[in-house]
Every structure is written in structure tokens, then in C-alpha cells.
Length: 167
Length: 172
Image (cartoon, rainbow over all chains, first blue to last red; front, side, top):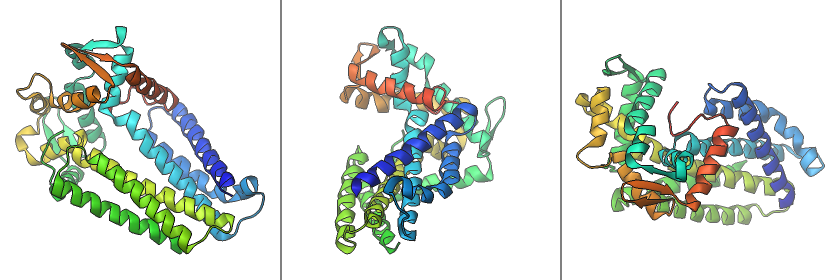
């Protein structure tokens, strides 16, 4: 019983992963997260009909609904997994070292390739594209209503968890 | 579908335990606690689910797997949100911009990350974990990738290529 369930789960995850990779290759400038959510939602209606393929029979409503939930949860894991290579500063540092001659970099060389200025300017540009703030050519930042709400949320969350350190 | 109440309850407990732990103990590395709570609550949910809905048919097995996957995903999402929005670089930066008017300037914001230390605060926070975890070797003024770190770096590079992520690291 669990063998068939495991096979179904692995197949559903593999299918979503392949579709996301294909969609990302076709539209490399689009958000990978939108792509993942889109693939998961667009393929979900087809999932109930895979019951005969995986279990050799038509499942009752609950069985099919659980199959769809498994599919969506696996899409969620793919989404979460993607934040690691896409956003992680630590992984990017390891990649810069891998690409460096002798897999070694001085701190100055690392800063030149992937330094604080690069990180901050890139994230500010992303926040500007997301309409959280505006940034003028000379670097002046103005929070937009969405940015104010986000700032308030982050500040409240940090107070709730009593986080005082800066990372 | 009523069995979905079990992961919902577990996720609520996970949030409350994590909140209490970070608030009261202020651990340097909260993810160790998050992992412990996540795994413990998955085991507890599996026990409750199989007790209330014994595994008789395929639907029961699908229900169990769906509930545990959803629970694990919700815990991971809370964990990730904590690190990316509240504890990590992006959250800290937004916190600074929102609360410190003087930092609403790109160059002053960049300078605030340098401080008086020889390393900027982003690298200074990550270097001990990278070296302590055996991912890199620190020699004098340089960093060298270890074989263990290479495995992770190559896996990350593969993900960059497969999912067309550019060079990752939050840089577009």
C-alpha cells in the first residue's frame, strides 16, 4: 500500500520539477516562485485522474482529494527548496569559491565578486520593482505604502520573537 | 477530511513552542530547536492519525501521507519565514530602513553593514558557521573550499542551471 503511495508521490514531484525546469528555461527572467505555484495549480486538476495509473483503480472522493493535497504539498516543498539556491548568501559564497582558481579567494577578492554593496543594491532594486520603495539615482530611498506595511510587519515580528541582533 | 485537523493542531503547537523558545531562551541557533520540534510533532501526528484512522485502505495511507506532508511543509514555511523575514539579511535590512530614517540612503545603508570590524557584518555572521561546519577553511586572509563544501557548491550550481536561476544569492 505504501509502496504505491511513495511511487505516486515521487512521480508527482518529478513531474512538477521537470515542468518547472522547462518553464524556467523558456522564461528565464520570470519569477521562479510564480512558475512553481503556476505549475502546481495548473496541473492539480489532472492529478485525481492518475489514481488508475498508480493504484490500478478509481479511488473514492477522499482518496483523490488526498492525492491532490500530496501534489500541492510537494509543490510547496519545491517552492521552499528553491529559496536555498536562489536566495542564500552562504551558498553563493560557496559557489564563488568553487568557481575561483584553486577554489580559494582572499576576503578582498570575495568582496569584489559578491560583496555587501552588490547584495544590498540588488535587494533594493528588487524591493523597488516590487513597489515597496523608490530609489533615486543618487540613492535616496522612500518607502511606499506596501513597504511601510512590510516594515511594520517585520518590526512587529522581531519584537514578538525578541530579536535584537542584526544579520 | 476531518483528519486535517491533526496537522493544523500540530503546526499551532510548533509555532507556539518556537515562539516561546526564541523569546525565553534566545538561542544562537534556533533551527536546532525548530528541527527537534518539527520531527517530534510529525511523530506525534503519525501516532494520533494511525490510532484514529487505522491503515485499512489506500485512502487511509494517502490521508496519512498528505497530513504529514502538509504538516512538514507548514512547519518548514514558518521556519523559512522566521529566517528570511525576521532573522536574516532581507528582514534585517527592511527593519533598518523602516526604523532608522538616516539609513534611507543606499550608500549609508551599505556603510552601516561595514561598521568598525575588519569583515562586513554579513560575512562576519556566516564565517564561523562556514568554518565550523567544515564547508571552508580559513587561512590567514583567504578562504578555501573543502571537499564537503564542494559537494554543496556543485549541487547549488546544478540547481542554478536546471532552474535558470542565474547566480543565485538573492542577486538578479
